[in-house]
Structure formats: structure tokens, C-alpha cells
Amino acid sequence: MTRPPALAITAQDAEAVAAHTGVLAVLAEPGAKLDPAAGRVNRAMRGAVERAVASEAFSKLDPGGALRLDWPGGLQARAVLVLRLDRKADAEAARKAGAAVGAAMDKDGALILAGAHRGAAQMALGALLRAYAYTDQRSKPGDPPGKLSVMVTKPEAVEAEMAPLLAVAEGVYFTRDLVNSPANVLTTKAFAKHVKALKEHGVEVEILDEDAMEKLGMGALLAVGQGSESPSKLAIMQWKGGKKSAPTLALVGKGVVFDTGGISLKPGAGMEDMTMDMAGAGVVAGVMKTLALRKAKANVVGLVGLVENMPSGRAYRPGDVVKSMKGDTIEVINTDAEGRLVLADVLWYAQERFKPAAMIDLATLTGAVIIALGHENTGVFANDDALADAMLKAAAAEGEGAWRLPLGAGYDKQLKSRHADMKNTGGRPGGSITAAQFLARFVKEETPWVHLDIAGTAMRSTDTPLAPKGATGWGVRALDRLVRDKFEG
Image 1 (cartoon, rainbow, N blue to C red):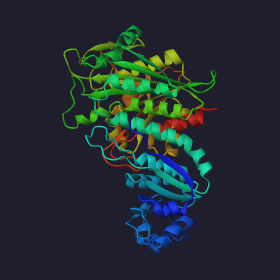
Image 2 (spheres, rainbow, N blue to C red):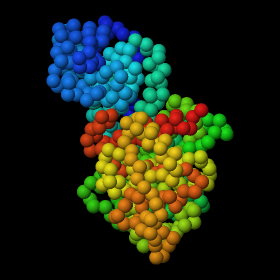
Image 3 (tube, rainbow, N blue to C red):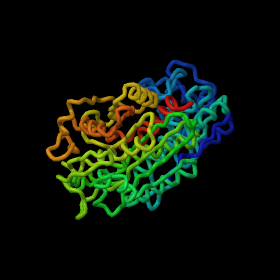
Image 4 (tube, rainbow, N blue to C red):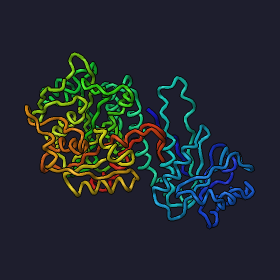
């Protein structure tokens, strides 16, 4: 699995700056005096930094933007990035500035002259996140990015602030690798193996096989995977970092390692992207790794239903009626509405076994949420205003877009079935809402619950501020913050 570049937080060292051969970054703001570190670089470059800061191009940059000066004279550095970042810049701008450095890193690494800026740790996080590259499937992957160095006036303080952020970076990288992996590599068995590896970090892991799930009555989940040669599994990860009396948060992820649509076959164009249909499960695994690495003082259980939705002689069909673990029967209208069937059983199991104080599920559940919100925001649905508000606050603090959409009894009529207790799809109108309304039927009244539809945010076709094209890892940072804000201590 891919690891973040090595990181060094050091005191300021003029000789190291002069000898650095990779990317060098300095901080500046229009109309303000350069800080001492940027001033030294400016003198070595015979005033080039000052001229860049005075330019119209620099003045037009958003906070966190960068102006690049290639092959600067007077230095060994390959390039100097002049980052627009004032002393009052927020964490999001600091991460964006760091990301400009991460995007420019190569085997020679990068050096950020952060000085006394309060956002030094967030700059480092942004650089680490943006430096990610998925190269596992290349015959010649090339050289990984070199070391990231950050020079500050108080290295010990920044190191302490950075420690939990490194755990976040590890979790995001883990999630991105899972989501970017092709389906012939990340089978249900392979996913379970990656989950088992979390044991080395102190996570308790169980893997339930098909026989165990059949005994539990998980007819909805098992129906989805019955057409595949890859066996369906339920992976359970427990992090017990809090007191025994502390509440438990349950995180539930949809883990469809590949989704053909089943008998309701998807169009061929674009089907290759369905390797990312396990992104909800990937985020849950990434969060669990982060919590373990930073020794979070919270009790969190992550549950991911791992299946593959394939057409075959054994595949479930439109018109089939399946029975969920809860006991409700479901008429299958469309086998491509499979994620909600997986989640229905896992949500019920999570509540029956762990009695969580709150429950959050993540799934690339509907294309309809992309029509509603595009790729900038995850759809948020909830039966509890306080938990929804906490989730939205955490996402906003981390710069991960999220927007709440409604639930309501009026949508239930779209799920009425002639033959069973409900249908698995409510048709095109309000498609993401009726999918969430379906899941709500498997959430007990006393359980605060949030559903996150990440279909538009889990994978991007273009670079984003903190990630290259591909898997984003959306949700790892937001959920980690939610745990810190609401479930620790």
C-alpha cells in the first residue's frame, strides 16, 4: 500500500536551504514585508521573490495559491513556489498552500519555509495529501516523492500538532489505494485481507463468511453477491480506545468491489469506474486506521459489507423477493440498486450486536446525488438534527463539501410493493432521497443516524486541491474530526 512521503519538522537552517535541490516554498502576502526566511531566499535570487509578490499574477491568487519560479539563480532548488498565505489564513488555505507544494514534489522532495506561521502543520498535511500517486499497477512506477521538510521557529510544537495529522494522512492514503485498486486486484478476499492487516495497529477484526451471514438471516446482502465467484463477506473492525462505559459510534460502509449492475446491466461506457463502488467501505477502513494510529480515546466499530454484483446463472433477478436480517421482505425492481440491500443487513446487524449511540453509513449509493449536488458535495441524510449538524460542522472544518437533503414520509409511497414489504427502488424522482428513505427503514427509532451518499465525491475525473485525479478519500478527515469533537474524552 502507498505511504505518505517522509516528513521532517526542523528548525530554520540557512545552509540546508541553500543546498536543497527539490522544490522550495516561501510564504508572502501582497503589500506586506517578507518574513526573514523569504527575505533570505529573495536576496539569493536578487529580488525575484519581491518582484513576484508585486506582480499582478500574484495579486490575483486566492489564499493558498502559488506562483512558481523555475530554476532560480543563486539557489540549488529546482523551483521556488511563492505561496500567498497571510498570517491570519485559516486551516483550509494553509492546506491548499501545502498542496501546491505536494503537487510539485519529485524524488528530490520539497522544503517549506513556514517560519512562525500557525498553519505550518496544516501546510504539511496538504502537501502530504497532494503528493499521493497510485502507481501499483504500473510496470515501471517511477521514483516516489522525496522527503518533505518544513522549517519552523518552534519545531517541537509543530511536531506535536502534526502527530495526529500524520495518522489522518495514512488513513486517507489507505482509502485512496483501496478505491483506486482494480477489481481483479481488490476482490472481496483481498479487501478482507487488507482489513485484517489493521490488527497490527490494535484494531480487533472479525470476518464473517457466507455461512455465518446466512445463519444471521442476511438474505438481502447475500442476494447481491450470489452471482459472483467472489464470496461475500462482512468485515468488522473494533477500536476500543475509550472507557468501557463510553458510547460506541458505528461506521458502516458499502463495499461492492465491482458493480456491473447485475442482470439490470449497466451501459458499457464508463463501467470501468465501478471499481470505486466500494468507496464507502474504503473510507470506513481508512478512518479505523487513522483512529488506531493516533490512539483515539473513543470506541468505534466499523462494519463493511463486501460483495461483487455480477450477472450469471446464479445472479439475483428483477422480480425476486429477498428477506432481510430484520425480517422485512424486499421486491427487487432493479438489481443495480444493490448497495441499499447490502447496507440494510449491515445496518441492522450493527444495531443488534453493538447497540451504538450513533451510526453513520457511507456509500456510493446513487447517481441521482450527482445530478443534485455535482461533485463538490456529499449528500447528507439524517434522522437526528444534532448528529447531522455535527457531521456538517466536521466536514466544513476539514474543507470536505457536504449538504443536507431531506427525508420524509411522503417519499415512502414510492417504495410500496405489490408483492413484498417494500421495493428496492423508488424510481427516478428524488432517487437519492428514496434510497436514503429505504435505508431509514433499517434504522431503529432510538438510533441517531446519518447516511452519506458519496457517489459524487469519492472519485474525481480531475485533480482537486488536495488530491490528484482518482480517489479522493472524502470522509476520512471529516469523520476523524467528528470522532474527536463528539466521541472522545
